[in-house]
Picture 1 (spheres, one colour):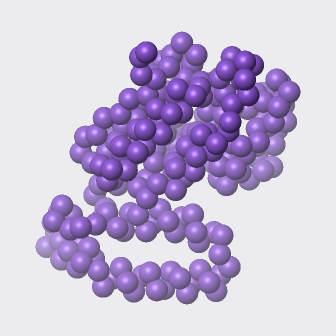
Picture 2 (cartoon, one colour; picture 1 turned 30 degrees about the vertical axis):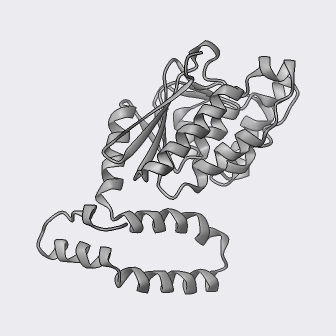
Length: 251
């Protein structure tokens, strides 16, 4: 049986590719199992970034409705994939060069950065088959105000890349998705490993904390980081007008 998901690691970046083109990269049991295996491998490799991309004209069509019709699928594997993309210590980047539907939008929204082709279309079609965008509402509504995506969720109507960027669902709209992703991963690798990890963590944690708690936690983190080996190396390189080499640090 051919693999539905593959991965390669180059320059500390894991590129995971969805390649189940016969069903538009639908979230089948096999695809989810292989996606988990690739994420396991990326964790073992201690990569600096994870890129989730696809082959074929669709990034992901959502649930595999043929499988669901034969036997309802346990949602645990899908929920876990979304959590792993959201909680990965390194930045996760969705590279979208084709249509995204239903659960595929949740998969995409679970990534920290979302780069889409300017011609990409999206649709939350769940209500049109008698269900709700339940599981994927968790990552989606953590990045998009409910009022901005309510019409799309309630009607199932499609929307385009500029609309997705305006509501906050995607971060970058580009005519060259691969080139934009390369720029982003290069930028991540230019940062200190721990500094990037802590920055991802605070992007998630600070909005959830009250102001007093947030200032206290961030003041402590700032003091710790300014006294770290990474900061020492980074500021020395800055003074010397050089690019810091993080490879000798444990990160």
